[in-house]
Length: 463
Image 1 (tube, rainbow, N blue to C red):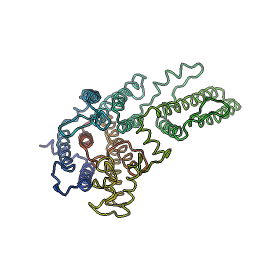
Image 2 (cartoon, rainbow, N blue to C red):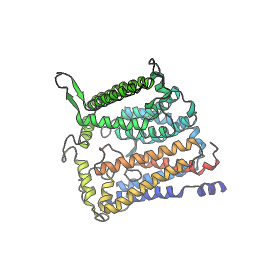
Image 3 (cartoon, one colour):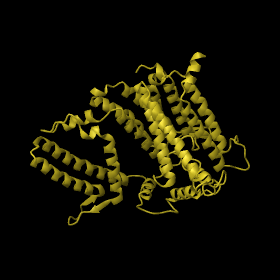
Image 4 (tube, rainbow, N blue to C red):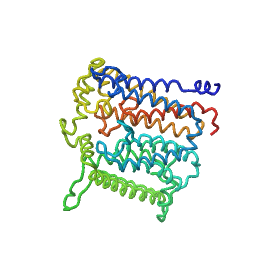
């Protein structure tokens, strides 16, 4: 009894109440958008709002069970949980596709996505492995194993294919960067093989996050400009970002001349190496992005091209995004009122999937800019609260797991809202605790309750 009182007293109530608030607002919105006059009861289990009540009940039950389990269990059984999840990701690849993807395991009339639970399993195993490392004495083997833990589920998820969850998994790179796990040990083995160029540290490995943003920038530039014929050289083509990299190469070459002019010979050899490497890497990125883009499924290419403005089809392939923005805008300042959404209603079907991926649309239409701002602030409050919890952990395992949860929330929140207002391509990412669906509700609930449990026992952890 004393132990249970201690857990309750140490529970992070702000995060818990934020979590409950999102569940309530989400259920109320689903009830509004999918309301059926013939089955008005919230507990009409033939309707989507009735099914969501079931998922919420299961999620809260599992959450309480998770909270009552000793926190050491999650670290001790991280590897078996991870392997079991990988097995499920392999199993779904051999099942019949649903909506064009092999991502679901059927449970009666409903189903779950193992990829959602893979996020929890990967977070636990990464937290366990990275917390066991000495960050000051990392080896290339350490970095390779950490990447392997991350890449295995990403590859299986991409094979389904589930582009949305694949993108969410890149959140782990930010977590690893926060913990000081760079790619230096892995890269130095190759860089130091080059004569007269000896680095104690690689710029690429130590500046992973800036490099990631550069990669994204070059990828977008490549897709925007595509391939162009090189003047006076028939048959050869130049890809978008290769032109930019070539310009940077020229500027860097001029800089290298000044380095030599001022007599910094040692710096000069390294500068020239970095210049050449930058050109080669940039060109490789351009070629890889262009070729990979050409191998995407037609609907995936369409979504990216529509988002980047390379083509327009407001009443065809870009219909979902176009109508979503119209629904959000139609809410005005104060909205149309509860159950009065017209553009995003399931009955009108102007916004397909308005109870799942586009759940923000009916909420914005009903409650307007003021209500939307409140919801955005609520999500930001939860994300900031998770980061506060992460920073106060004594255990590195707890901190890594907490940061993983925080980044998942941020990715889902930012991309989903971005999809609804035209700032992000449509890649099928649900809004946590808001969108209709069992897999997302169960995985995020378990994720939060594990975090609450780890945090409640933080004072008893020495490391």
